[in-house]
Image 1 (tube, helix red, strand yellow):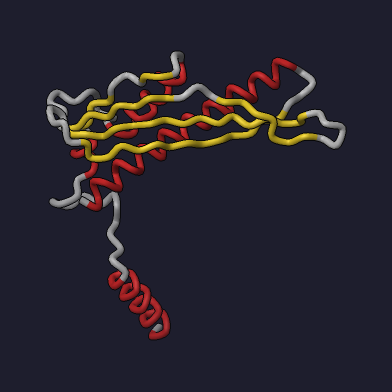
Image 2: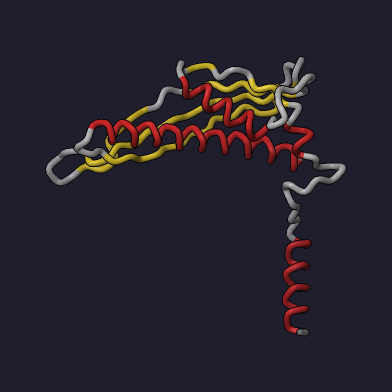
Length: 168
């Protein structure tokens, strides 16, 4: 029993001394859901199509799950690039057996009504997919790789924003 107590005490002291702070714990100083609910997400610009809508919807679900803010304090502007497809794995006979979908987004996070930008960043991601004999199956794998890339971009943007609020 004493051994477990000292082990737990040692773990607690290590965590306390390293500056560990729970990211999602609601405190008077760190109410993430309240802060993220004050963000207005502009329609995604750049590459035209459903992917911008999917990226925006993913961020809306993460940042403002209770709906559009009435009086937003922050604005998030995103520009999405067109997916780039390149050969990923090439067989010894020179024929590609898989491809790589690469996507990137640039975003600006700022206070509403202010010219001051809190941060301006770029994120990128890649997802591979296999080339199959069945063209329909290959197209479905490609669409899934693009959806995975969009979700990854959404997660990167989301974590950058909540990290800003927790470190502020």
